[in-house]
Length: 334
Length: 262
Image 1 (cartoon, each protein chain N blue to C red):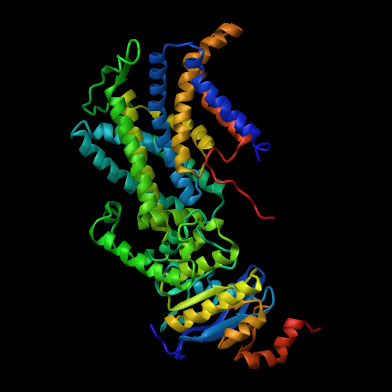
Image 2 (cartoon, rainbow over the protein chains, first blue to last red):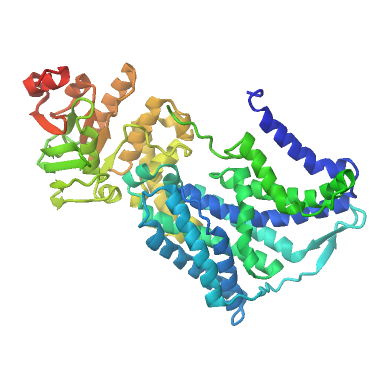
């Protein structure tokens, strides 16, 4: 058992070592290290949210939804522009309705006609939805950079200055966002585990045919799943937009969610969450601490690690554990 | 719940059903009926079209020709979930359980159709939604007792041995409280003891709930013991129909099973 799993064990050991190395070697003061980790966790929560959207849809319909990032952008744009004429929470509620309507339209116009088609056809269809949403969002809402103001102070606050020398700077908005995201994830988990509809969703994810035979209507389940994915996208969009402004580059966040789902496993909700956090923290630590080491050792320019770190990690995982940390191992009967 | 096993009027009638996949003619002009409360078997050698017949009744396949009357309503095409709504439940030959879910959750999904509370109430677990959950749980517990799987309630189905998984499959179908229960090779791959258990459960379901049962089976001896009437298919055609004794003595059936030069 252990013998066969040594590459995985080695990878995880490397990961853990990498996470604690800066602290253990005394390369950074404890306070600064904690700050970097917190920053990473914040980014990680957002990755988790986007990845969660991917996983939900993949589990329930076997579709790899390339449009998840575009949905994040579209939702954020809707909230930002509507919030100009009404309170932001009302805008957010309306945006929820828009995302549900969108889910319904996608089920009607894209999924239903393509039922029982090859996975690649569905992937291409979601690629089409991506470009449509990117473009249509800008047509309707405009293509500038917009703000979402949640009315929470953005100034960092100094906390724990007794425990660490110099204290830790925490942004209150970040903190609220992280709590909101965590609450959403917990709520979804309960919904999936404890309600009849959640049970039906899991049933469809496990076996389409059997689910139909006991009278679960696939079409309705798809609308619900895409709606939930839309709402998750909305929350991610609002948090991201409040932090960095709503702009086209949000759509690219989706690409960061890819390594996250590879790391966590395509079919695992906890995997999406843990994967997002690992990648968020990992890339921040790599950027801050690994960069200078590389500069010193190889006389490089350093920097930019944040951009490729996640993908390299995902590549390593694909090599040694393709099903991800929590994914289901596929064993085909021969 | 004491039903005297009174066999009633036909509840399901299949008339002139033909089904082909491209050039392969899976069913050709097959007709038979199933009476209320009876145990009706469909048997035949490999590739005779037994599973196709079941899939037509259940709405997975849509026949090119023929019609099916269920509970007085004629229909040409249905979807599986419509069939379930109208009271037709089924089990699967190669298990199609929700492997990641517990035994209890698997069987509870069978009650989904009967749940009426809306999504919001469900999410908050209040009022009607909670009452409903408790009611349905009681029904499911009765089924669990009935099929003697109490000890495995919380076990993920994927971890159970094959014979027990088959029982969970049956339990999930029973949770729909169907009028007609379709069993696709319920004894396939079982050892003798498991087969005897399954036979007992099938007879008990029929006896205590009055459920009409249509079962496909490979193993002739099992079928002959528990069925009221038997349809025999061979190469997609019906070659015999009648009581087990009549069918057993039928020359066409003997030929189909033992093989003769045509």
